Length: 131
Image (cartoon, rainbow, N blue to C red; front, side):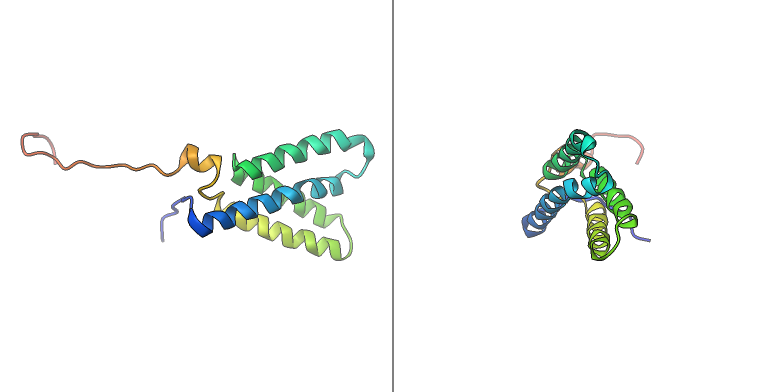
């Protein structure tokens, strides 16, 4: 069984993941507005969507934000009739793929958790010890 290695791809793959994050940040507000259509919740929906969208755009906690978006989209799918429901399901599938792929190199998560280099120096002959 291969070991799971979390990487932060750069280059064209990193740009593609950045575009994916931007696209799903734009989907955050309409999908939250579908869940709570009452105008009295407009401030809380706007605040929640802004935080979710900002996390996705910056790539800060991007996997958790993407997972939250998947949950919102699936709940929206369950309560929406017609063709819009299938659109929400397709968006949920893409957001789930984003959760599995990660945010990419152009994100805050990559700067906080990725791209570390560990160099092991060879043992010199004058150092004795186990091994």
